[in-house]
Amino acid sequence: WLEFRRVLFRSVSGKLGISGKKAIMNIELEYFYPKEKMEYMKKKAKEKTDHIIKTVIKDYMSDYEKELAVHDYLVKNSSYDRRLFNGNMPQESYTDYGVLVKGVGVCEGYAKAMYRILNSIGIETLFVTGQGVGHDGSVEPHAWNIVKIDGEYYQVDVTWDNPLTSNGRKEILHDYFNITDAKMRKDHRWDDSLYPKCNKERYNFKKFVA
Image 1: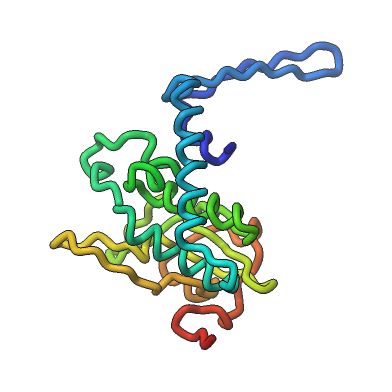
Image 2: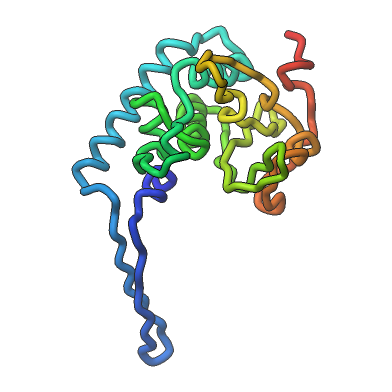
């Protein structure tokens, strides 16, 4: 929920005062949405998460199969929010609510949706922030996940497995499903001191054999 609320701050301001040997800080947070709207978004995201789990997760599945099912569900049932490019994208597209309930979002929303669902079914998942590097060398803020499967950590980028196509046709890729740090570094940047190392390939989509 803290991750969910993080991007909904319109502004943060504060004052620091010194009283004796104590430092006292008063922080004022201004949200993009009123409390009632945020509680509604939280409730609907939770309901949708429960629905997805009941729909795609089966008791006989391994953690790898559950992770793959969630990844593919998100790609099939949501689209990248093109409104980002013309500046009229709503803040909810940065949240798991946007991806899960509205079916539209950007990288942060995809990563938070993956984070919410997988952690809800007991699969350790981290929310990673860094930068994505385009084909032309451009660098933009980006977010994705690190997932732990059978004691091993893997890089996962749902957003880049859900590419924008010129004809609008839906494509499901697995180029960024359970890859190593080495492969991720080809077009991603992050502070690797903040996250566990991902150097295994056992559960890489293109190499895994059940």
